[in-house]
Image 1 (tube, rainbow over the protein chains, first blue to last red):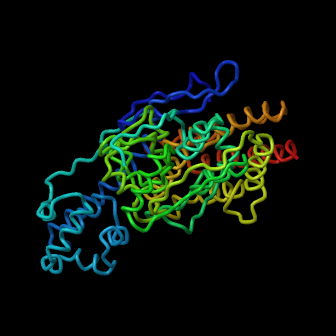
Image 2 (spheres, chains in turn brown, red; image 1 turned 90 degrees about the vertical axis):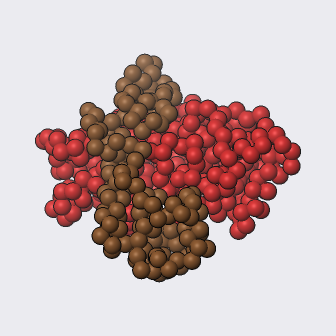
Length: 145
Length: 337
């Protein structure tokens, strides 16, 4: 890659410029700042699209009464039951139980606080679900090259 | 513990976190070596495709060696020693860090990116092998040289604690590391040879077909059949994932091929082997080929599939990469023999 070819596409992810290795006109390698590159932007957005889909489906499961609000917070934090279990110090099968509305309702305050601490929210906020979820990237609008 | 500690540490932005930390730490201890050199000596370049290992339903594809090995091997080969410590107890982990800072030693830390507030939200995933250096403390804030950032950053104690004790794959368990036994002279030539030999052997002589150029070949073969095996949508996800692993922040572009080419250029001077300059040029061209793959692959993902971005065409591009890397690494082995 030549220095003048180091991509300077939109930094849609608000990241700072990253270091690219490129050769200058004498063929020597130099460190060059790159603002961003559309193919890698696209790949990142695709990862966020997956997260967005998981959040959407969690919300609709909760609205239909098939899952507890814990599911939303879990996928919002990009976790699965195994990871949440590790962070909350709760066994995985108990996490799975707590994803069911009827067991969620009987959670002790202590356990609710433990989950809330993992998500860095207040214990009361566990029950609140947002109307719309703001993601750090615009998963719909990306066009790029 | 004093309120404020600030070690005189020179922050230099780098492409990849681990080679950046290695280079910055060695520079701090009086041996200025570039990131590319740290990466090459540490044997950072890799290719591995493990379709049976799934992360979030996507296969494990890696362009770099396992976390921690670049720093460890680079130090070992150059005659330094890396000391590392893990912790059960979180308070102990922070106390040990504070003590080290009080003694004036900058500390490398393994952290989980998800919990680092100074990362842009869009890049915060549960990746637990991110390396950074802590070089000071001001009240409740730690002063951090995060090599993928332009300038030093700050992070509150509670957040750094979370990042040090991130859970899941590659959980850091508070791991911190530092350099010891700094020699007067580094054995540069020997270290460079060792680094090249490790990577070249792995790329062309790996005993299992998932690693090195054979791994790239296997990936090409399977990628060609992704649409029929996985369905269109899932095939797109797999392709996007591959591009992400290859081009994401931290690779310096082209799946580390450019940073490796930069290393070969430095190696040519250090070993006084002009032929390595030619091999560096070839490595750059191979890197360009990988970039081409990402560009066309992204076009494919967006549904603008032309003749040159179809799955078979992409597979052919990968085969080209594999073939040329095979020749290159064989030549490299001959060159340093």
